[in-house]
Structure formats: structure tokens, C-alpha cells
Length: 235
Image 1: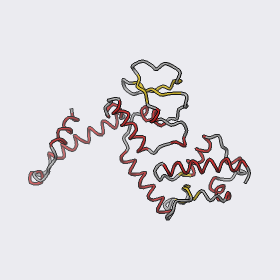
Image 2: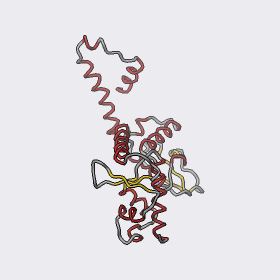
Image 3: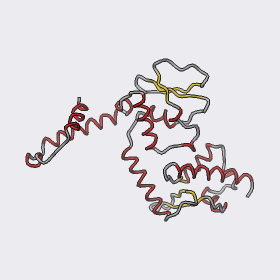
Image 4: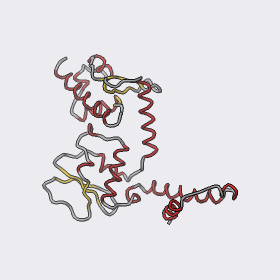
């Protein structure tokens, strides 16, 4: 194998391992191509114009394993070859996990989400506007911090290359943890649409509950603290 092939293949193995070790995530080939491009690697030029799947097969590497989505024969992913188990089952578990994360995902303001997922140079640091969290700014570490109108996004929550990408659940957890550290309410973090939906859900619950038959209603038991919290959110 020539040096060029070693370059793209070594990079792909590294990203694949980072994805899997970051929560048993499959690296889809469409994502893999983007990761290689972000590293300045043109794998097609290095492999004579072949597609990534064919290039992996032809490379004959013992470090990667190709698996196919059982529900879509056009979708392929790659995982470390050390991972045992049926490829179809691994893919199904991966898709189920993605759907669960999607259901549990909070719709943060675009500016908030971007502040935690956009890569940043290691020589810079990031601040987000305090008042409405509508924008953020990156400045050199050697530059004085902006005014009190901005809040620091600690470096532990940032990443410097796409290969460091954390799954959405982890990013969501980081945002909420950062907000708690800075005494920011969740309502300030989420988009207006998400907040309205949550409020409407609570109000709809009380409307529906009021229409329940008295005999059935007498069987309903809701902890008082939950009722107090729900009523508080209606105001």
C-alpha cells in the first residue's frame, strides 16, 4: 500500500474508532467522506477515483468492518473490525438509539446549539451573549474578555475538529450543565417554538383532564409537587 492510501485509511480508522468509542455509533460512509474532506484528504484522488466503499474493500484492511442498513441497501456504515455481532442487528440498534435521542432532544435556539457544536481553534475561546443568548463570539486567548454582557463557554464543552464530535445527547447534556453553572433557565435556552409547544402541552393536559368522567377522575393521582410545577409553568 502506498503512502497516499495509508494517509486516507489511517485517518478513516481513527475517525471510525472515535465514533464507536463515543457511544457505539456507526460512521456512515456519507459522514466518513465529509470527515476526510475536513482533514484535507481527497480519498478519490488517492484511490484512483473509487467510491469509499470500494476503496475500503480494495484496501483489505483488518481494522475496519463495513455493515449495511437492513432497511436501505444503499446505506452503508463502517465500524471497528473488533466489534462482534450481526451487522444488521448493530445497525438496527444504532437507528433505534438515534430515534430515541431525537425524541428526547430539546430544540435549543440555533445560536445556543451552534455555540456548542461549531469547531473552534485551540488558540481561541468562545463567549455567548448573556441577555437573550442570540449570538456568540470567538476571540483570541490573548485578548481581554468581553464585557459582562457575555458568558464564557468553558473549553471542556467545545471541540476543535469534527472527529471530536459528541452525539446529540451528550451535547444536550453539556448545554444544560453549562446553563446550570451560569444559573440560566431552560426557557432562555430553547427556541420560542419549543417553549410554546411545551406550554401548550401543559394547558392541553389540564383541558383534557377537566373533561374526564368524575368516576375515572377519582382514580387519577398526581403528586402535589408535579401539579405545582405544572401550574407554575402556565403563568
